[in-house]
Length: 235
Image (cartoon, rainbow, N blue to C red; front, side, top):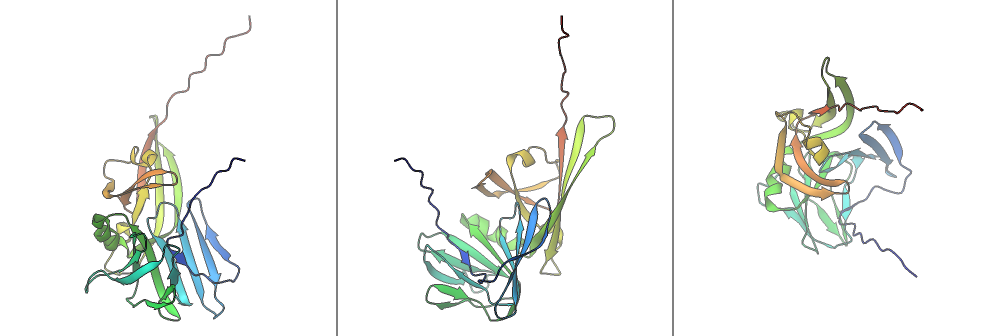
């Protein structure tokens, strides 16, 4: 018999509780899911396409993570670090950003934050050392949704395509324009010249290679090619 085996190791597992999930809202590029907790709190997961972070909003709930790859340590990378660094048994490193600082505590294979925490936790994979400072610089701004609009330029064969991300900042001094997302090649090839890309953030996603992009609005221009029609008449 022939079989196909697809290997997958859940490197970071977020505990969301056994209660049924609730879909709070959705649009073309995102969905917001709520996980009620037995203690009365709620964990809200903001799933937005193109985000290099996992974003969780805790409302009177306890952050808790584990890993199938074995967590060796969870600690600040330096005394002044704005994030905690998770080192796994396979030596991959994940970064944990929180809207207010706290220490993670270990109980067997699970690492937890404070009980009844209210705030944002963002999780990102640091594929290389240079990515850490960039992920840290943009972690305060997170997306919660998006809208897509089209506009055909009058008298031309160019279509303007706009992705407008709905974003929130956990730091009043950081503008939502600092939103960090990632784009596929068919996006980057049509970006207007003013688009701020971040080549230090590059990796292969399930849909292909992606590159970091900074900004809460993407402007793209796509040429519309003429479609010839040559249908021979019946003889």
